[in-house]
Each structure stands twice: as C-alpha cells, then as structure tokens.
Image 1 (cartoon, rainbow, N blue to C red):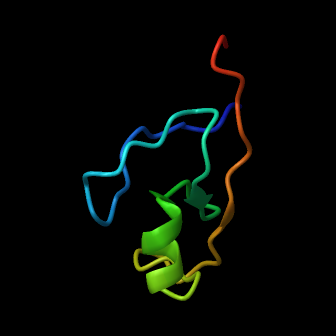
Image 2: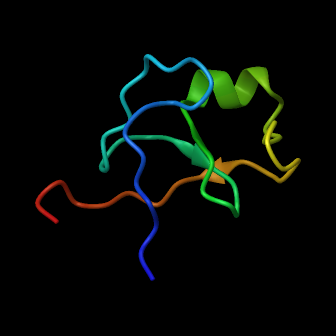
Length: 61
C-alpha cells in the first residue's frame, strides 16, 4: 500500500508539499511542512506520534 502523499501542510494549510520535496509524516500519514513539524517539536498533534522525514517520490511517478 502506497503512502497518501498529501500536497498541503495540515497545520498551516499554505505550504505546498510536492512529492519530491521535504515533509514530515507520522505513522497515520498526518503530514506537515518542516517548519510546522519543528514548531510542534516533532510530535503529531493528531495522534501524539513521532513526525519523521517523509520518503520522497520521484515527480514522474
């Protein structure tokens, strides 16, 4: 099963998250831009899980 590659930060709602760009994700696929993830100390506000770098996907996929 592939990750749901969300395209906008769930916290600020303005930062685009391209599939080949940096983002942070938890095990439930909540997705945030790096500045928002850092502001939340790397903890998902939805589930309390750890936010880790999201794997990048080639833009042609």
